[in-house]
Image (cartoon, rainbow, N blue to C red):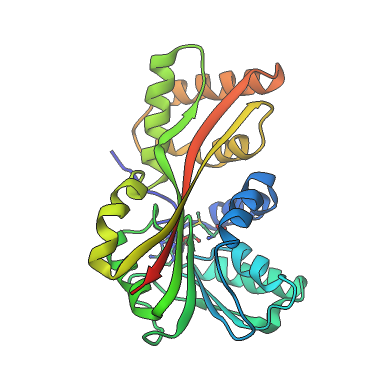
Length: 273
Ligand SMILES: C[S@@+](CC[C@H](N)C(=O)[O-])C[C@H]1O[C@@H](n2cnc3c(N)ncnc32)[C@H](O)[C@@H]1O
């Protein structure tokens, strides 16, 4: 088996894969599902004129740019990602959207941040923690760079709940498992995190839970399947003919409006003690 979460190794990907992921991150950021989930947890973040915000694992900078567009925001946002190509795209998009003035992007590994202790009021990790090599070290770094009393939001899916319906339930169950394990280094991290947080100096202020589902028509989950389903074969978890059959069933479900897919997402709003 050769399981290799592409986001975990985002600084080692081939050019065309990088371009596909940049397109997927940007189209996802415009999807109604993404904006609804972000807007929901963003209501729990208090920002003032001088807030310093870290967007860790920022990818193309979708979250950083959304925050920078907020009316009256005049603080500073630092987007950090290990992928030079994603950071280059983030800088380009923020210049195009003219939000560059309050946002800065850095290439850096979330396991050893080149950032001062207690230098942020708020940190957000939006769909990062499911991908990193060592979630505990990243949580420790978040605790180090956020000031006592500051806020950390960790948002991600619980990917044991990721499911696409196909008529043969056993085949569907195997494909769901393969998709979760081929695409995410830590598919169950959101349920593990609740045990880890007190050890790293965090208290849970609020947790938000959302079932994301698409029934009949497909957009968010169709784009996820197009980008990541091929990984079930390259990882050795499924055979090519099984993937082809699954993709055919998903296409048919989209065509005749019988599509069904779902996943549970969680936002942990944390206080740094
Ligand atoms: C699913 S993407 C999310 C991107 C962005 N937060 C968004 O929601 O559009 C995961 C991101 O985590 C980054 N990443 C993975 N491991 C990392 C690490 N150890 N340090 C920094 N970034 C990392 C990847 O390069 C990728 O950009």
